[in-house]
Image 1 (cartoon, rainbow, N blue to C red):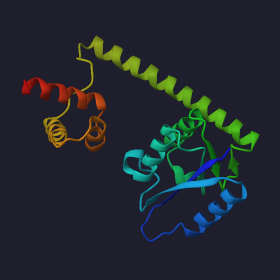
Image 2 (cartoon, rainbow, N blue to C red; image 1 turned 120 degrees about the horizontal axis):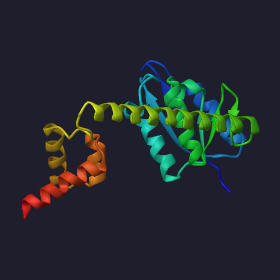
Image 3 (tube, rainbow, N blue to C red; image 1 turned 135 degrees about the vertical axis):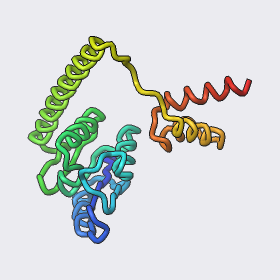
Image 4 (spheres, rainbow, N blue to C red; image 1 turned 180 degrees about the horizontal axis):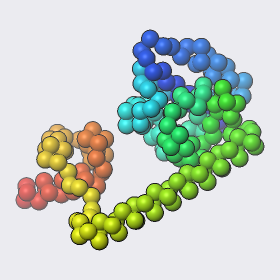
Length: 201
Protein backbone atom coordinates (compact mmCIF):
# COMPACT_ATOMS: atom_id res chain seq x y z
CA UNK A 1 0.00 0.00 0.00
CA UNK A 2 1.34 3.43 -0.97
CA UNK A 3 2.16 5.82 1.88
CA UNK A 4 1.11 9.33 0.92
CA UNK A 5 3.54 11.84 2.42
CA UNK A 6 3.30 15.62 2.46
CA UNK A 7 5.90 18.18 3.54
CA UNK A 8 5.15 21.27 5.61
CA UNK A 9 7.70 24.08 5.65
CA UNK A 10 7.64 27.54 7.13
CA UNK A 11 10.06 30.47 7.27
CA UNK A 12 9.58 33.59 9.37
CA UNK A 13 10.92 36.09 6.80
CA UNK A 14 10.66 36.38 3.03
CA UNK A 15 14.47 36.35 2.75
CA UNK A 16 14.83 32.87 4.25
CA UNK A 17 14.76 29.73 2.12
CA UNK A 18 13.87 26.12 2.82
CA UNK A 19 15.61 24.64 -0.24
CA UNK A 20 18.14 22.54 1.74
CA UNK A 21 15.47 21.31 4.14
CA UNK A 22 13.21 20.39 1.23
CA UNK A 23 15.95 18.40 -0.51
CA UNK A 24 16.70 16.41 2.65
CA UNK A 25 13.03 15.66 3.35
CA UNK A 26 12.47 14.62 -0.27
CA UNK A 27 15.45 12.26 -0.09
CA UNK A 28 14.11 10.82 3.15
CA UNK A 29 10.68 10.21 1.64
CA UNK A 30 12.30 8.43 -1.31
CA UNK A 31 14.50 6.34 1.00
CA UNK A 32 11.51 5.25 3.09
CA UNK A 33 9.45 4.43 0.00
CA UNK A 34 6.87 7.15 0.62
CA UNK A 35 5.08 8.90 -2.25
CA UNK A 36 5.34 12.68 -1.90
CA UNK A 37 1.91 14.05 -2.88
CA UNK A 38 2.07 17.69 -1.80
CA UNK A 39 4.17 20.45 -0.26
CA UNK A 40 2.62 23.08 2.01
CA UNK A 41 4.76 26.17 2.50
CA UNK A 42 4.13 29.32 4.54
CA UNK A 43 6.55 32.11 3.61
CA UNK A 44 7.38 35.01 5.92
CA UNK A 45 5.00 33.90 8.69
CA UNK A 46 5.90 33.52 12.35
CA UNK A 47 5.36 30.15 14.03
CA UNK A 48 3.51 32.01 16.76
CA UNK A 49 0.67 32.71 14.33
CA UNK A 50 -2.44 30.55 14.53
CA UNK A 51 -3.90 28.33 11.86
CA UNK A 52 -6.13 31.11 10.47
CA UNK A 53 -3.06 33.26 9.77
CA UNK A 54 -1.05 30.49 8.09
CA UNK A 55 -2.78 29.62 4.77
CA UNK A 56 -0.65 26.57 3.95
CA UNK A 57 -0.97 25.22 7.49
CA UNK A 58 -4.74 25.64 7.23
CA UNK A 59 -4.73 23.70 3.93
CA UNK A 60 -2.71 20.95 5.63
CA UNK A 61 -5.37 20.67 8.34
CA UNK A 62 -8.06 20.34 5.67
CA UNK A 63 -6.09 17.65 3.82
CA UNK A 64 -5.77 15.67 7.07
CA UNK A 65 -9.52 16.02 7.67
CA UNK A 66 -10.26 14.76 4.13
CA UNK A 67 -8.07 11.70 4.66
CA UNK A 68 -5.63 12.71 1.90
CA UNK A 69 -2.50 12.29 4.05
CA UNK A 70 -0.74 9.30 5.63
CA UNK A 71 2.35 11.04 7.02
CA UNK A 72 3.34 14.69 7.57
CA UNK A 73 7.03 15.56 7.20
CA UNK A 74 8.65 18.63 8.75
CA UNK A 75 12.22 19.74 9.36
CA UNK A 76 11.73 20.51 13.06
CA UNK A 77 8.99 20.86 15.65
CA UNK A 78 9.17 24.67 15.63
CA UNK A 79 8.24 24.69 11.93
CA UNK A 80 4.82 23.34 12.92
CA UNK A 81 4.36 25.86 15.71
CA UNK A 82 6.03 27.64 18.59
CA UNK A 83 3.05 27.64 20.92
CA UNK A 84 3.04 24.44 22.99
CA UNK A 85 -0.73 24.56 23.28
CA UNK A 86 -1.26 24.87 19.51
CA UNK A 87 1.37 22.22 18.80
CA UNK A 88 -0.20 19.69 21.18
CA UNK A 89 -3.63 20.34 19.68
CA UNK A 90 -2.28 19.85 16.15
CA UNK A 91 -0.41 16.64 16.99
CA UNK A 92 -3.46 15.28 18.79
CA UNK A 93 -5.65 16.10 15.78
CA UNK A 94 -3.42 14.26 13.30
CA UNK A 95 -3.01 11.36 15.72
CA UNK A 96 -6.79 10.94 15.99
CA UNK A 97 -6.97 11.02 12.17
CA UNK A 98 -4.48 8.14 11.99
CA UNK A 99 -1.81 10.31 10.37
CA UNK A 100 1.86 9.76 11.21
CA UNK A 101 4.47 12.49 11.70
CA UNK A 102 8.12 12.60 10.67
CA UNK A 103 10.21 15.41 12.20
CA UNK A 104 13.82 15.37 11.03
CA UNK A 105 15.67 17.38 13.68
CA UNK A 106 14.02 15.70 16.67
CA UNK A 107 14.26 12.22 15.16
CA UNK A 108 10.52 11.61 15.44
CA UNK A 109 8.93 9.08 13.10
CA UNK A 110 5.66 7.66 14.37
CA UNK A 111 5.36 5.47 11.26
CA UNK A 112 8.27 3.23 12.30
CA UNK A 113 9.33 4.13 15.86
CA UNK A 114 7.49 2.71 18.92
CA UNK A 115 9.01 5.44 21.14
CA UNK A 116 7.68 8.15 18.82
CA UNK A 117 4.23 6.55 18.89
CA UNK A 118 4.39 6.48 22.69
CA UNK A 119 5.21 10.20 22.69
CA UNK A 120 2.15 10.80 20.52
CA UNK A 121 -0.03 8.89 22.95
CA UNK A 122 1.32 10.97 25.84
CA UNK A 123 0.59 14.15 23.93
CA UNK A 124 -2.96 12.89 23.47
CA UNK A 125 -3.27 12.36 27.23
CA UNK A 126 -2.01 15.88 27.92
CA UNK A 127 -4.39 17.33 25.32
CA UNK A 128 -7.36 15.55 26.92
CA UNK A 129 -6.24 16.77 30.35
CA UNK A 130 -6.06 20.33 28.99
CA UNK A 131 -9.53 20.03 27.43
CA UNK A 132 -10.88 18.87 30.79
CA UNK A 133 -9.40 21.90 32.54
CA UNK A 134 -10.88 24.21 29.91
CA UNK A 135 -14.33 22.59 30.25
CA UNK A 136 -14.20 23.04 34.03
CA UNK A 137 -13.20 26.70 33.67
CA UNK A 138 -16.02 27.33 31.22
CA UNK A 139 -18.56 25.64 33.50
CA UNK A 140 -17.36 27.68 36.49
CA UNK A 141 -17.52 30.88 34.42
CA UNK A 142 -21.09 30.13 33.30
CA UNK A 143 -22.16 29.51 36.88
CA UNK A 144 -20.67 32.83 37.97
CA UNK A 145 -22.41 34.60 35.08
CA UNK A 146 -25.75 33.02 35.95
CA UNK A 147 -25.34 34.04 39.59
CA UNK A 148 -24.80 37.63 38.45
CA UNK A 149 -27.85 37.51 36.20
CA UNK A 150 -25.84 37.92 33.02
CA UNK A 151 -27.32 36.81 29.71
CA UNK A 152 -25.55 33.75 28.32
CA UNK A 153 -25.02 32.56 24.77
CA UNK A 154 -22.89 33.39 21.77
CA UNK A 155 -22.75 37.02 20.68
CA UNK A 156 -24.63 37.70 17.47
CA UNK A 157 -22.96 38.56 14.18
CA UNK A 158 -22.10 42.19 13.55
CA UNK A 159 -24.02 44.08 10.87
CA UNK A 160 -20.78 44.23 8.86
CA UNK A 161 -20.43 40.43 8.77
CA UNK A 162 -24.13 39.90 8.05
CA UNK A 163 -23.90 42.26 5.07
CA UNK A 164 -20.77 40.48 3.81
CA UNK A 165 -22.53 37.12 4.10
CA UNK A 166 -25.59 38.39 2.22
CA UNK A 167 -23.41 39.85 -0.52
CA UNK A 168 -21.45 36.62 -1.05
CA UNK A 169 -24.59 34.45 -0.96
CA UNK A 170 -26.25 36.76 -3.50
CA UNK A 171 -23.17 36.32 -5.70
CA UNK A 172 -23.89 32.59 -5.80
CA UNK A 173 -21.23 31.27 -3.42
CA UNK A 174 -21.95 28.15 -1.36
CA UNK A 175 -22.59 28.25 2.39
CA UNK A 176 -19.21 26.60 3.05
CA UNK A 177 -17.34 29.03 0.78
CA UNK A 178 -18.99 32.05 2.39
CA UNK A 179 -18.20 30.74 5.88
CA UNK A 180 -14.52 30.45 4.92
CA UNK A 181 -14.47 33.91 3.35
CA UNK A 182 -16.12 35.70 6.26
CA UNK A 183 -14.53 33.50 8.97
CA UNK A 184 -17.78 32.42 10.59
CA UNK A 185 -19.46 29.05 11.10
CA UNK A 186 -21.55 27.40 8.39
CA UNK A 187 -24.46 27.52 10.85
CA UNK A 188 -24.26 31.31 10.98
CA UNK A 189 -24.25 31.52 7.18
CA UNK A 190 -27.19 29.10 6.93
CA UNK A 191 -29.15 31.24 9.40
CA UNK A 192 -28.58 34.38 7.31
CA UNK A 193 -29.50 32.44 4.15
CA UNK A 194 -32.81 31.33 5.72
CA UNK A 195 -33.57 34.93 6.65
CA UNK A 196 -32.83 36.03 3.08
CA UNK A 197 -35.13 33.34 1.66
CA UNK A 198 -37.90 34.30 4.08
CA UNK A 199 -37.59 37.97 3.09
CA UNK A 200 -37.74 37.05 -0.60
CA UNK A 201 -41.11 35.28 -0.23
